[in-house]
Image (tube, rainbow, N blue to C red; front, side):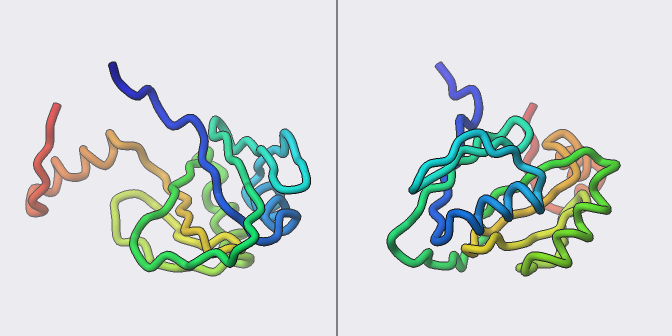
Length: 135
């Protein structure tokens, strides 16, 4: 028995219309359902649930974040839109092109170009970083 993938991600939001606009207009998500206290969106194969919170969203101070992908040809234009619209929270220091940004409720997001395989290949090519690799 094993987990086969991520089923969906739920994010608490304080302003549902604002969050829907952010994920549809900026990131190209597709709104699939909406009700008074929530919404379902698709971002590629990702099922994103937004749920209205009656409480303020506490900003995270750790490195936890959600990394998203896009078509490589769309990456530069999407990065430009993100940089013009969203607050950035970190510079990229890892393999692959990335931009790290916050949604309107402070959820940490990353737009990343690369895969697990390209990351592992990077570590193989740079053995100075002590990463144990497994097949």
